[in-house]
Amino acid sequence: MMQQYRAYLIGENGIFRSAEAFEAPSDSSALSFARQFTRHGKVEVWQLGRKIAVLDPEESLPRSLTRQ
Image 1: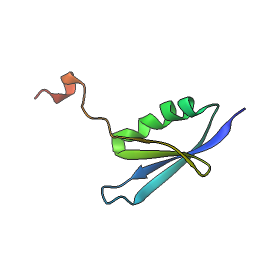
Image 2: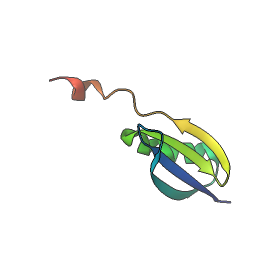
Image 3: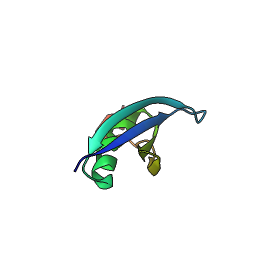
Image 4: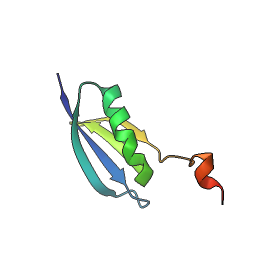
């Protein structure tokens, strides 16, 4: 059974910048889906009124992209 989730992108000031509603069969599936948004910053994942997790932004780029 699919459940409703939301991924909230959190700005540097702690304010919600945007939200993405989606469905997933489990919390772990929802977290995997929401991880794609971390390239834009910190993401909070919620299932209705229950906070599932806070995902931190991706910490480093692949080595090939960091070389100049």
